[in-house]
Image (cartoon, rainbow, N blue to C red; front, top):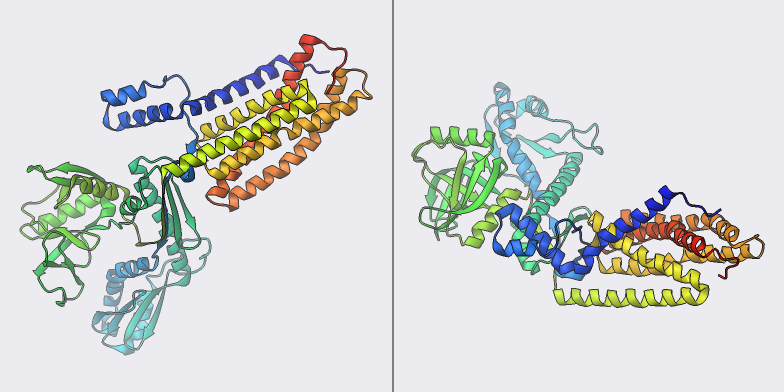
Length: 553
């Protein structure tokens, strides 16, 4: 009746051994963490004696996955940023000006001359000299409209074109604004994630909150100020033709020109064309380096499209200056001595080594599509994280001892078997968390403590059912078999409802709530496994070895 096939026994034992092996590196956390960091560093920059020693501190053939520690356990930086999505509207409409101009030129006989006017940031305003041709102007510009690419904007166009006296006014439609907001937030998330990953931190939390906010939590980083310096810079790089230099920032730059300050030359301002020749989006790589004088610089390389545009411009403008503009400041304005066909170059300035390295990181990750405004910033020290870990350890130990003592006092030998399964269960939880690369937070520790208490629930149901069956069954083997069989439905029902709750917490929650949901969900699955399979296998082994005529639960 209690016979378990050999293949099933081997499968249960293998699952337990695999889970415990995956959990084992967490017992040597510092050593394994140093090993993993050394392996990554060697892959990037090559080996040296220090890295080789750190890599050798843990055998390569052993598992090396760890449970990542969250911000509240490791310490680090916390930021809540708001994305200024309105900035993107102005850039989008400004980029439409050449197309609008060309469309109106095709009906010039009706509209007369065309002149771009100053207007609100969310509109493009073009004045025509013949207002009687407004109908033709509106029809020509409306031909530029395109369908909105989003699920919520099906059937809508991306622009709205209206007449306002002698002016043709172009605005983004409401559906296109919503789609643009979503794209801007997603692009900002991806770029922030790239910038943080470049630093080599572990398991950052970068997620959207609400309509236009982003939560950034980076464990192990020194301070919130350091994180702001890394991700707060827009890092918008452009290469623009230079019209002239001036010392008067209030001078009228002329149509389609702008005045920007020089980064290195105090009191010097450059008049440059507003439309860039090439932007940072055409970069494929950027690396810190040194020039022939030993000064820090940043070398860059364009993609084929950017290299072609840059090469064509330099061919046509030998002897003319062009500006390298970073975040509305002219980093340098060299003169084109000869055509630059290679698609690569360097940015020089009064950089320190750290500044050139940070600029290279920002350029590799890409420019943020919109400015970030930081609403909240916190730095959590590692001492607080260490205290939290210690408190979590104490909580787990106290909860575990209490459960172990209760089970032995209540069920005797069967309680001992349940306790062995409980220890295996905790090991399996850490093994699975290590395997999936989960991040453990303080609420996650609370989930583990709760799991320790809940883990014996299934065993209690089984043992109480066995007690009842002993009163009517013919022998201990039959009572145990019926106890597991008839308690199974109650075990499944109770744990499925809790698992559904954990899934809802994970889907709808964020940050610490998700950490709690992950450990609770994993703990439920391992608890069911150990209660139904592991304890039963241990009891079968004991029955086969002792063959008792009667048992006492």
